[in-house]
Length: 155
Figure 1 (tube, rainbow, N blue to C red):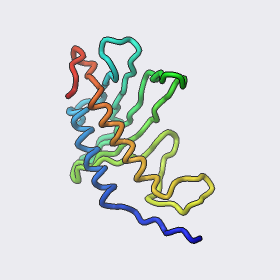
Figure 2: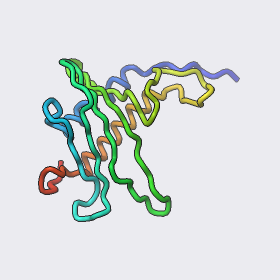
Figure 3: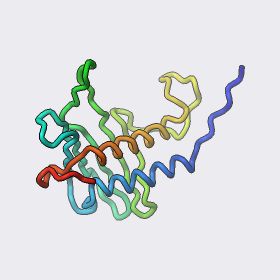
Figure 4: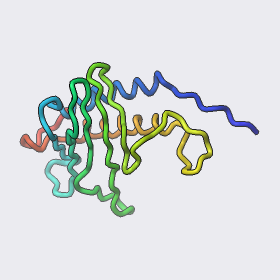
């Protein structure tokens, strides 16, 4: 049985990147001037929360490179410790897009892959990374609070 060849969903990926740009600016509104933003995740009255750190690594006139890392691991019931990935995101301010450029130690991702392949990378791996970023940012927006302020909810 022959597999249908994967076609890049460019409209879908650009929609995710556009939504991720808006989500990042919502969570880190002073991204153009500040070097870092810290968000608490979870219940602001608990000591077991994790802290998400947005660090600006590079600024150019039209782009900003941001690294997202979680400082404290999240304890999942019955599953031990889970560490979210370290993600680098490039924001394109002229196009108002945010694209994942690095996830964990993988520094380059192609827009599509032949499948199966040596590393078992999915054909739509780049799309999945950007979609995951959107889900993670939406979670941060729903459950995060600014640490610089008196634990006020973001939204």
